[in-house]
Amino acid sequence: MRKLSIGALVASLCILPYAAGAGIIQGTVEVSSVVPAKATPMNAYPGRAGSMPGMHAIDHGRVVDTVVYVESVPASAESALAATHERTPQLAQEGQAFVPRVLAVAVGGKVDFPNHDPIYHNVFSLSPARRFDLGKYPKGSSRQVVFPRAGLINVYCDIHTDMEAFILVVPNHAFTRPSTSGEYALPELPAGRYVVHAWHPDLGERHVTVDVPGAGPVTANLSL
Image (cartoon, rainbow, N blue to C red; front, side, top):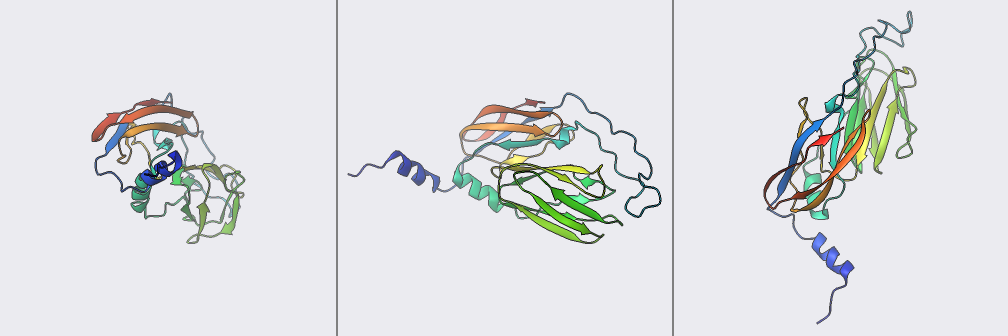
């Protein structure tokens, strides 16, 4: 009887159906502090159509700006998770700010960049993981970008230098965002050992190793 090599055995396991029995990683993210937004002028550029009053005030250190994701998952689990992510996320230009401030997307995912403001905006990034420049476009218009590599994407507007957002391109679809109270729950995963990361644009990144049971939840609390 021919013996399978280690590589062939691993490959054969990867094409097995996604396990019916699965566990859930859940817990709470705690942040050290929230820094209130600095006061901004009603109109930073008086007399110019390129700016507007009532800009969004951006607090730093909010727990909802955290991205919780799993470093690696089995291929069968990733296929099942990817099938449930059909909606293309949006990073909108609204109130002379990017909304939301933080967005997560899996490798290969797309993001729409609609302009909801009555002024022109520009969206660009010089980040090594994905460089792009969408040019200037008015209210009601939108652009789309595909993100083929994992990494952090810093997003800016070259018209309004106070505008900044973050897109974290994660390695798979096992990710989530915590609620305002810090509670989170990742999608179901087959039993096994996983590395769970919590990333925040202001507070850095932490990770823990979690053993997921064949069924039911397991708690992994994270502090930033």
